Amino acid sequence: MKETFYITTPIYYPSGRYHIGTAYTTVLADTIKRYNQLKNKETYMLTGADEHGQKIEKKSKEANKTPQEYVDDMAEMARELWNKMDIQYNDFIRTTDERHEKVVQKIFDKFMEQGDIYKGEYEGLYCVPCETFFTETQLVDGKCPDCGREVVPMKEEAYFFNMKKYEDRLLKYYEEHPDFIKPEYRKQEMINNFIKPGLEDLCVTRTSFDWGIKVLKDPKHVIYVWLDALTNYITALGYMSEDDTLFKKFWPANIQLVGKDIARFHLIYWPIFLMALDLPLPKTIFVHNWIMMKDGKMSKSKGNVIYPEDLIDRYGLDATKYFLLREMPTSQDGLFSPEEFVQRYNFDLCNDLSNLLNRTISMVNKYFDGQVPEYNGTPNDVDEEIEKVCIEQIEKFETLFNNFEIANSIQEIWKLIARTNKYIDETMPWQLAKEEQTEKLKSVMYHLIENLRKIAILIKPFMNETSENILRQIGITQENLITWESLQQYNQLKNIKVIEKGEPIFMRLNTEEEMEYIKQVMKK
Ligand code: MSP
Image (cartoon, rainbow, N blue to C red):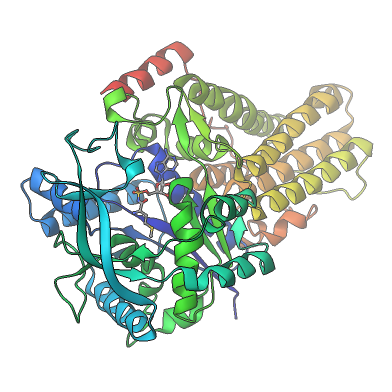
């Protein structure tokens, strides 16, 4: 039986088009999923939409739609984007799905019965025209962040989840499970900022709006968004339903991805809910940073928003994904700029990768009529060195990737690409041909094709089309030469013929023109 692997993205608010920042979490999840699939695991990826709450209710009114119509349209839009981005999710859960709503109600009742949820009073700052509660920190200059009007202190009856009860258990769990929170520094942040100062009980219902899941035994209360939203990760698998096969198979999740803004909900409330349900916790919750622009956050009012579709239509999906993953460091925010995008395209994709492929294909054609020479078993020093480098780079890639240092891991692949380009300059095949050193020349060609094959496998999780394109051009079609295990082999290529004329996979961009193009679509 295959090892299972369950990965989740947050479920997205249907608040408008997704920009490249929002798309990042899902691209990352898809990459990690594909990597594990390549490693022969039975993978399952969940994504979806977080459709309840007062904000959505308001947005739908603005759009002259019922909330249901509004979220239906938005879910369709999300699916279209994920299809365009070739995201291989297995399930798309919506919090308005009956399968989800029913179970959330059951979970709420269970918490009530256990005494984890109690009735109290919610006190907050209320904006009357917007009919919304805010916390002190959400206000802008002491006023409503939405309409800018005065807010007034208000109380309403509400249910609360007793978080304090689980505080010690949570801390102990953090301590005993070093892999639970990644990167490590996020754990300390949670402890220092939220747990040590004392956990506050969480308000889990509201009566001031309607668009949500009703508490069965007290239907004037609507279950507040986070208790509703977080449970999607298990309701999607059929937890507490008639058919919980998937739940039994895939829970606990191997990895749950979240952006830094929602770290607190996932690192504190979510594990506590799971403890209260007496369920195992996910093995790892990985918190990623944000993609920022030079002038800060992406926002429509600043005119600095970039949408994935605009990049994909002009530069292709692989270049877009490459940029997003390559530019996001683990310990700080990533930066998007038109300059950087075009440079990465020209240097990394065109100069380094595309040229390596082209040079190799044209040499194999020129010297051996396209037939890849077989491994001769007696590599000389330079060839031995390139074999060693290749193995080392693969190892480095894996170690970093397994630790979710994705940008760094990709950098290791590009070091291998650079080193392979340098190998051509070092061995000077044109000189070997002139001097008729055929055995050496054969060996160089063999090693170039081998490295390209490995590079194609390594980039497969995030540049699938490019990977397939490279493999096709170098004539690798057999399944057993495209597996993860085959990365360890250096002598299996037999009877391989490259295509007659190499096709460039990335063409050099005109820097000025393309920077201008990107700036224009950002303003649009
Ligand atoms: N609905 C909640 C999640 C509930 S999960 C039980 C939510 N939705 S969201 O649509 O606002 O955000 C979805 C994801 O996009 C989050 O992980 C968020 O961190 C991420 N990002 C939003 N802007 C981003 C960037 N600029 N850069 C990277 N990720 C960003 O939060």
